[in-house]
Each structure stands twice: as C-alpha cells, then as structure tokens.
Image (cartoon, rainbow, N blue to C red; front, side, top):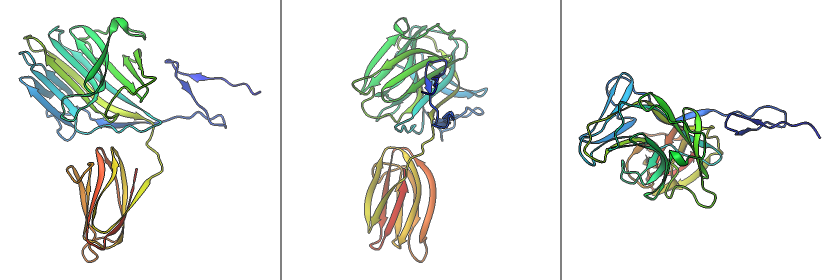
Amino acid sequence: MANWKQLSDQYGWSADCTPNSELITTDKIRLVGAIFNGATVDTSFWTAAVSTGTVTQANSSLVLTSGTANAHYAKVYSVRRANWISGTANKFRTNMRIESSDDDITCKIGVGWGATMPTITDGAYFKIVGSTISACTMANTAETAVASGSFNGTYAAPTLTNSTVYEILYTTGKVYFLIAGVIVHTASFPTANWTSNTVNFHCFADVTNTGNSAAVKYVFRGMQIARIGKMLTMPHYKYIAGAATTVCKLGGGILHKIIVNTAGTLCTIYDQTSAAVPLIGILDTNKTTGTIGSVDYECPFFNGLTIVTTGAGSDITIIYE
C-alpha cells in the first residue's frame, strides 16, 4: 500500500488531493456586504432601521449608536441575501469594536433572515451584553444561546474596545463561531437543521437598548458573507410556450441566458417567487422591434426567479442555476 498522509490546518480540518497528488483548493467569493466608503451609507448594499439610535459612516467605518431609551435601537442589514448551495460553506466576517460596554445594551452581529426585516426569525450570531459574549442560533424565533463560560472551543475574552474579527462559518449541519481566527464554539445539529425557514441569509448588526442607558457606539470596519467555493453546477433549463407566468426557482441562483425561439411580445423577469418586485428586466420579444436569438444575462438573483411571457406565439428557453 502506498504511503499516505492526511493534510490538515490549524483547526484540524482536513484537505483533499486528486488521484494525481494535486491539492484541491477553492476560492472565497463575496456574496453580500461592501466596504464603508466615505460618509454616506450606501443604500444599494445596506438598509438601516433606527429608533432614536443612528447608523452613520465615518473614517471608512460604519457606526451604530444605540438609542437612550428602553427598546430603542440602531440596526443595519445587507439589502440582499447570501445564497447557500450544497457542498459549500458560507462565512460571515466583521471587524468591530465597542467604545464602551453597558449591561443595558445588547449587540447582535451575524447572519439572519426574517419575513419582516430587520426582525430576525432565523440565523446565527454573536450576542454581546455588557462584556458577556454568547454564540447563538435561532430557528423560527427560538433562540439557543451558549454563553462564553460554556463554549466548547478555545476562548480568550477579547478586548471589546479594540477592533476584533468575529466570524461565523456555517453549513446545514454545523455552525462554527470564531473570534480573532480561533474557533471558540461549534454548534452541531445531528438530527435537525439549525434553521427553520432558509439558509439564505442577510448579514446584519443589531444594537438595542434594554434599559435606559447612555448611548453607546459600535464601530464596524467591514461586514460581509462569502462563499467558500465557487458555485459551479450544471445549469438548468425551463421551456416556456405561449403567454404564462412561470416560477422557475424558489431561492437564489444565476440567470445565465434567455433564448427567444419564436417571437412573442414581452418577457418580464422578476427576482422573486411570484410576479412581484424586484424586477430584473423586461425583454422585448416582438419579431419587429425586439430580439430573436440568445440574450446573455449572467445575473444573480436572490429571492427566486419568475418569468412572465405575453403573446400567444411566445416560445423561449431559460438557462439558469
């Protein structure tokens, strides 16, 4: 038998090789999030929600300042959600510091989703109350919080007033919580998924006053979700004839191209699970004024893919993942 040696990194995670002894590597691809340029919050990437608190930008940082009354807040979340696909892992990352700790202020940072954002009903996040850090998962509003004293990894309390990197690496079976590059806690789910509704999440930060404390500032140098591995799958196709409303996919993916086989009138493309906004585009398929042939989009969608065709003669093929 040939000699064989298992490769692993500092976390104990193994590496694979091809039959030709070539190390298999993968790319990290940013899915949502953006840097904080200038002094204006970029609403193309971020949505803010406040109740006497504030969400501002300064010195290439995002600043969340808590309100000063009970239940008041400052929240921010990515406009779009990070699509998760099987066979990969997604990783949340932020670099944050707190100007001062207060037991009446609760900060949550991580990944989450809710039907009425910014209210989170599913997700995974760090929760910081005063100087106490917990690793949390949430499924259908039910939070499971593990305080730092019960972490099952290697934990050294960070200096909260210094900028520190917080990361959450997640699959459907496990959620890893990292502080300053060290796994502090691993949440495992051998019998049931840890999220009830979706694994396609926003990245978010939520600062809420739970008493009547003075305002506290939380400063973020960056926030994002990245996929560990490219989304390279065999594309799918959908054939549509005549006037119809067709839901091609529930959830995120990529619209590669639309092939207009026979003229119709219009093809309206929605990033949604129904004929509702947001709108990707309207393709003119009239044989006189429009396009017959292949139209490349290479456009990501985040909520779903719905196609509405008009014109009895319409005949198109959708290529997508």
